[in-house]
Amino acid sequence: MMEKEYVISELIRFSEIKDFKKEYLYFFKDYYEQAKIAYSNLCEKCIEYEKIDLPYDCLSNPIYCVKNRNDLKIITLYEELENE
Ligand SMILES: [Zn+2]
Image (cartoon, rainbow, N blue to C red; front, side, top):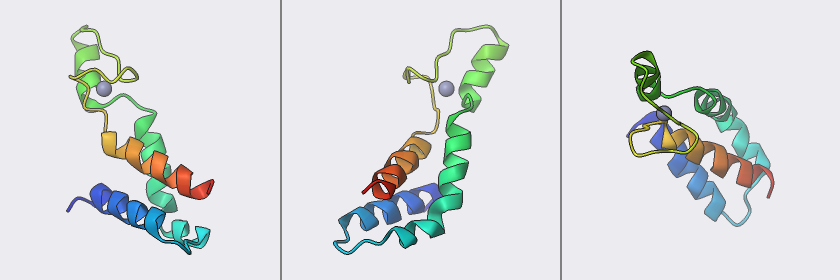
């Protein structure tokens, strides 16, 4: 399993724990910060398109954009748990 997929599965598991404690999130804080940084940049595919002057739009998440959806999942799950 990829590291990010592992983080996602753990965060989902957290969201299903009744007595979830926010301290559990501490273990994944670095992943969360990394995901935020990764997600604020263009994905590799879009950087390639930019180089050859083709249109790209990571934010609108077009089909060709491989901007890491796992990063977005990590960010969303983490923030949901943080704000619980
Ligand atoms: Zn992209």
